[in-house]
Image 1 (cartoon, rainbow, N blue to C red):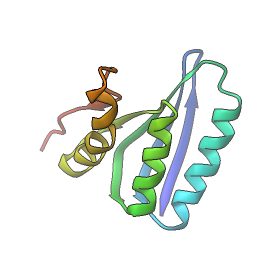
Image 2 (spheres, helix red, strand yellow):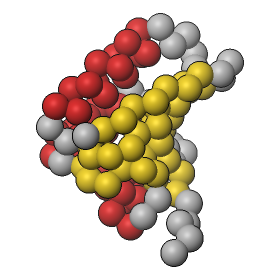
Image 3 (cartoon, rainbow, N blue to C red):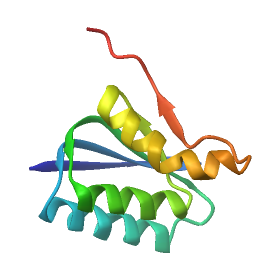
Image 4 (cartoon, one colour):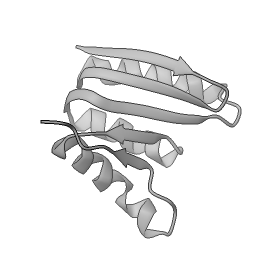
Length: 107
């Protein structure tokens, strides 16, 4: 199961995810993201993965697609940070600024 919460202000739209980004939930996030992209009018899109517990291959593919369209990501934990950094590495190598924000999680 995946909970998708959406928050918007004058500069950005944030999707806060909680649960597993897998199976049919990937399709739900993709639908929500496409709806926002269609009318974002210069706003930054941020996906907060701090409460995501699992990402399957379809989820990774969607994250890659979102990244190529300029979406930024917030990730904590070794695995989620690794996935995001692996996806964003190619763009960062081109001299563009990083698009992942990593925060240490208190143990």
